[in-house]
Image: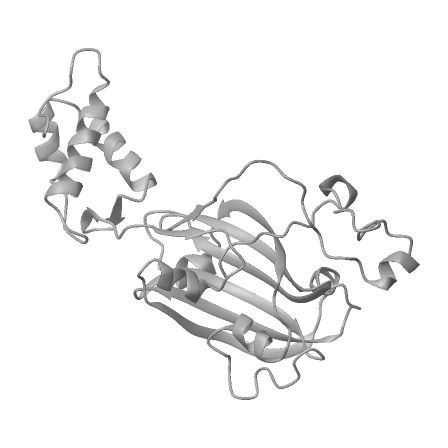
Length: 281
């Protein structure tokens, strides 16, 4: 039921926000304009600043979006992806969305220091470098950048960039089995704002992921996701020991404490940073 005025003791902007949220749910479709600020100030007997506060809250939540010089409209729903070691395309299809990709860059180059370190390789080794704009139902969702050692898959890009890098690795016997990912929030760069067609919000979620096939790092990737179009679903369960693959012989040779001891699972405290979870790529 739509409310036309604030209840006693309720902050006025909450009444305006509730009215607009109800309007989006029951009457308006994606792309429809909301009532003007002037009509809302008259309807609720509040100041224009109060109306803007309510609209700002819904813009921040991704319910509404502003188009400069045109007004405020109902935004497309957020894409809710589960944190798993899957591809962006696989997760999009699971949510009933049509994934897409535009290749922004495809090349072979020497691995810079941060990439080489993430891949456990020497600086300067040849790596495949791919930058893609990922979309869901035609809407820009993220800019993804990936590096894969050339010696693992020399022919990876011979016929162009595969639809799924993970699938291409599996075809070459390099099954991605686990990964570790760091997620941070940041303001979008000017290039990201343009590529992701961001207007109402500057917030992006940045991820940095190392993907492993057994004990070997097979891919390092970074991505920037639109904060107003993307959310992460994290399933939780009761605490239990974290299982980590056995270490490579080189780890033991260098004195690194890793792997298993007589079949005992390695505890997180013994090998920090390695977690067998990830989010969609």
